[in-house]
Image (cartoon, rainbow over all chains, first blue to last red; front, top):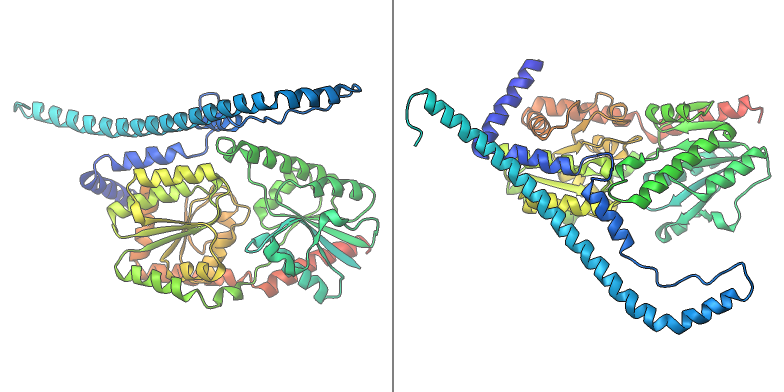
Length: 142
Length: 366
């Protein structure tokens, strides 16, 4: 039974390789990108999520304090510099969000390039096999 | 004697909320006073009589049992820990918490919330009198967390409701599409990394290339992770699926019924489920189920569907083709699915739930 299943899969894979060369590898690679993985320092998407979260800056500074009168002073300073804080903060936030957007685009492109590389590798392997076969047969591959 | 239920969220079209409602009916029917307290109440479900937890939940009356539905983190858990330590009888009904590792790279705050939910569940273990679980898989998790007295009680689900009339407009549209050719794949469940919709999309892409270029796939469910959903849409574009993939967010119940009726196969490649109600829904409505054997899925399917040990796109695509092109086999799987769904009739699950709780109450001398 297991042999029959294996034969069926091998036949299906061969057929798919004929009608859409490299497609199966590309599908597997694209699906793998979304699969469960331990998040470490090298996971680009996890890093992007962290940047995305940090790109929103809280402009409403806290004014509480355990020391008497300090909250009043903090509130006064906050009021005095509010116009500057909002002017500067909004630009910083817009910059952060633009950077996140850019990083997202770059990650998408890198992942597409990785996908294309896999596809090209498959094609190179196929061509190498063909060249070897032709050389073995004694004919000139050119 | 009272049995009051505490549920963090009480929402329309939510399996746990419907289970809670069915339980209240069951408790009241056999003579218990019973109310529902929720931390968050969906405004569309306000007419169902749940009370806000913030208004003052019941405590102090030791004749009252509190049944807590655990599935997410909630301030209810901390409150319960205190009142249970003071002698309040507490029963937990565990519907599973998704492991945070599935969300860490997509939605870090959600991952933290899941870790907290597990911690709260662990803290409730020493003060809980009885812990119920939807499946043996969930029960094993409870035992591992230190719960002493546990039992499996399936979720209460009125499968008769699935035989209501589907939305005629949606059904007509889907049938017209079907007349143009192409098999229809369906998966129902929130768009969430643990449910692995990306594996369904991958298998579907291979199936279309190999066997059926006009096939369609519908994924019904709101997005638990919007980032994962965006990645799924991008994946679909990269694989050139075009109109072949339909993502449906909030789908009213009659429309959902139309999707079940108009589909050919239910494909579930989820890696983590505490039970997976949509599998039973598909079985009840005569849709053959093909699933990846993981977590509680194996137990829910229980041989009444095609279970796969491997979910490589080629394996899944071939398995779906084998199932749909062998009419005798397909009919056998459908019949087995209907029998399996019948085991979860409301009458039998209600009886089982009440018997388990009453056995515990008798043992406690209540």
